[in-house]
Image (cartoon, rainbow, N blue to C red; front, side, top):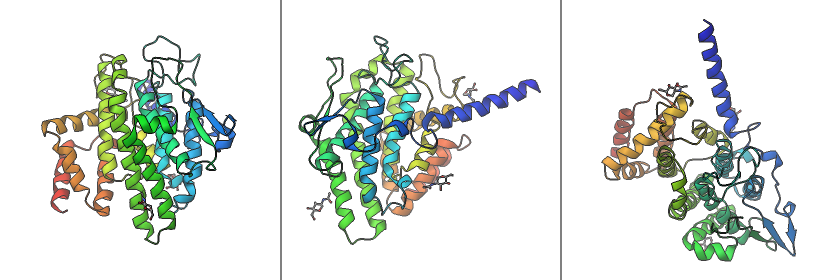
Length: 358
Ligand SMILES: *[C@@H]1O[C@H](CO)[C@@H](O)[C@H](O)[C@H]1NC(C)=O
Ligand SMILES: *[C@@H]1O[C@H](CO)[C@@H](O)[C@H](O)[C@H]1NC(C)=O
Ligand SMILES: *[C@@H]1O[C@H](CO)[C@@H](O)[C@H](O)[C@H]1NC(C)=O
């Protein structure tokens, strides 16, 4: 009896810890300490300087991006909580809480308890996030959606001189031209849609389409420019990181509305710590059953895709042929990721049926 009691208590604590992993009072980690206006950040001579190697600065960039884009998101929902941009800061919070922004080489204490707001330029996860933050932010400033059109933004380079990251609009456009174009296109779409006469339904489809095109290009660019940072991690973490990256293909194809509620649903079962050598999902003792299950499903989808020579992703994309199909796709993904009893074979048969009815 005692044993059962402590087991269920343990389960409760794990569940609670999971929710706390990505939110605080229902918002991203340390959201209330982040700035919401570009003019609140340090500036001199009309140039705002941001230190993206500090968590609060990165979170401030997201908070500013959200507050600057809200007025364009009316077609998506009536409240701030409906913005699809929430997925990004929530994800950053998960990276912080799960120890993924720490220096993985152990050469510095960056990100550890003594220096908890430090973001390591050597972390693969921070490198990927840089592509999902700095470039979109600079594109938004360039397009006059963020800021007043006069303030310029400059990013600090990392302290480790060996690490190369772009720091300004000119610099980032030169190093990542395709990526910058995609995000400029997203901000242009926001502006265009606010003046367009088409229905809210069509606007929403275009905004989400441009948003996911930007995200996909960020991940694609990051997968090559951050690649060498993977060598600092265990093989299970590398496998998870790759699977996490690939899972975005499935999410993007559904035009997932990554508002607060939907994002929390999908991110809560992500692993709460960096995986170590010897961790073997779905049998990692100190992870919750949801975390075990998610890791297992990610891996299954990736293996299936390889067995089918990449056609699982292709099949999925072709099944997402209409707004109705995309809605069904979102439900299917939810079952797959969240419901430990949901079998892979069910997924395949539903998917086959969906492709047929396109
Ligand atoms: C926005 O509208 C302008 C003017 O109509 C057009 O030239 C441009 O291609 C549009 N851009 C996007 C991304 O919709
Ligand atoms: C999010 O979920 C909460 C609790 O389930 C609910 O009260 C709220 O209305 C939801 N918000 C949105 C924007 O869907
Ligand atoms: C994760 O998986 C392993 C084996 O299935 C198990 O030992 C561990 O308890 C799991 N976590 C939970 C909470 O189910």
